[in-house]
Length: 363
Image (cartoon, rainbow, N blue to C red):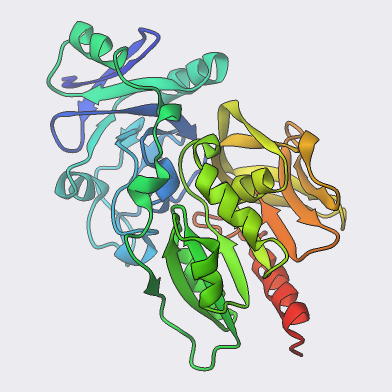
């Protein structure tokens, strides 16, 4: 029997079965087309403030493994799927998806026609919605239509670190990397450590002067949620870092550094969220398949002299990377940390390490 509702701001509704906590959860409704990686997606801070719809029809079949979580909590407001796997089939599983959702207090629903939800979002754009187990359709719709817009909230402030902290360092670190935490995923930190980097994570509000006082060999501006137009202070501090130390911006970090370089940003109709987005490196000509999770893109029209577009999305031509001819700056719109995959783009971390080595004069 249906005992939960997904209600969208346009008035459409989808009945289903509650598979998580009871109650209600509101957010911007978005979809991800990846076939695997539901636990990584559920713990990705870039989903803060959003209701996550997964298009793959069966979810939960390989269970839950805390080792793959990308942050310390579930980040989307709610989860919407077509069918919950009745049991987990993986030797590393330590529980079921239902148990995870219930234990973390996450409202979730299955038995939903996620194809229909996805088609509606693709046709009309992302919109606010709610998953509820204790309201009528009329009550839920009235409440959704009274919510503040997703774009009006600074979601970065809800996910960033409260204070600086050090990630586990390699035995003999070769570089010091400061990571500005706009909503960092743990695999970014793992991949930096694997390349000999001692990593310190700083809150997103950290001034450039404090970052530089730590004497990093490079700075990474991480992915994260929300509208980059709300991050004026972060843009100002990023601008102060250009030319002072090698910079690597990922996803939201790409947008922040892009704005610092004179570009603007705009909202995509339904974003890029999935593991099959083709990106072309305009310098090498190489095409890679990338993991993406973003709702905004960079308009390069106002880029300062010396900055240029380095990567483009082959589906819609949007900007997927920026670089500078005169300074050690590189950015990418996609998720090079590849959690979930594919792994094609992890060599971008090697490129960043090489950039630090060249500036540092290391072999």
